[in-house]
Amino acid sequence: MSHRWLGLILLLTLVGPACNTAAPEPKAKPARKHKPAPSAEKAAAKASAEPVNVPTSDHYGLPFAWEKGDAEPLGRTRGFLSDVLRDNEKYMARGKPYFEALKKPQQPRATVITCADSRLQSAAWDETPEHDDFTIRNIGNQVLTALGSVQYGIEHLNTPVLLILGHTGCGAIKAVLSKEHELPKAIASELEGIKLSAENPQDSKKKFDSLWADAVIENVHHQVKEALSKFGPRVVTGKLTVIGAVYDLTDAFGKGAGRIGIVDVNGNSEPNRLLAFVAAVQESKKQAPVASDDEPKEFAMPDLSLAGGAEPENPKLPKDDVQAAVGAMPGVVTRESAHSGQ
Image: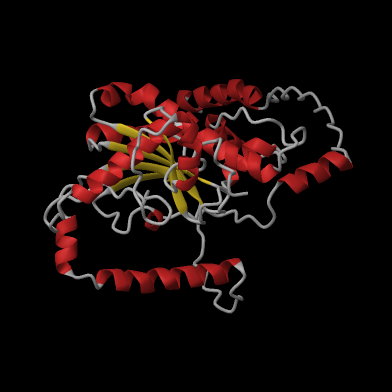
């Protein structure tokens, strides 16, 4: 046998036992502790908190369920979108010259903060809001909730007017005033900017509707105060006028449903001052020349004439006559005269 074969046999003899050596067994993992099953009450609570039939995919289908009734969600969606498309066609019919004018950079005269309530729309204070009203809407017509937008309108677009328009029948004010229900966190957080000193409706002898109307006015005063704290220097220099007003949706003040009444001008709410301000606005309105279509129009102040169409003979009325004058002035509302029509 050659030396090569002897060497190979010797090598196999030495390696073989090493290959047959058993590998060490892995250490056994400690047994997991058995978690007790959740109680039936906790399981039921969790199930009730989770929405039912929520899609697990991030892809959602188109709601082509046209067999649904008009009162059902998809039926209402269908009706709304149908109206949108039809009304848009009517709006487009204004023609090319109308839209050519809108291509120019916006130069609105008023930044308007009003409530998001669907019953309150710009037609209540301006028939032609395009190019004129920089409108900001949120629940409770709040300043700080949308401060960035407000600042853009006042400081970037340089609107000379900030109109804060509340309205009677406001659900946001009712929610803060009554505290009847626990609101979702996001809604409750947004309502924190509404500060009311109104008494508890349960402890008051006043009817809730009267407290509600008072609270609407109080909130407008508070929002004017917030605006002045942010933009006071512009008011002092005459670059900005902050007007607080109330749209009387429910005729809570007895001067006609839909009436707009001024309750605050630059933090002033005294009846005689408001009366003089309104009289001055009306006087300048009569004397102002009629603007052409190319000229910027005046800010569309509401009709603030006295009932019957007469102008006040003397804006500086004696103090004793102020309440009687304010009661007849549709464009002025004060807390003292707010419920004179009830």
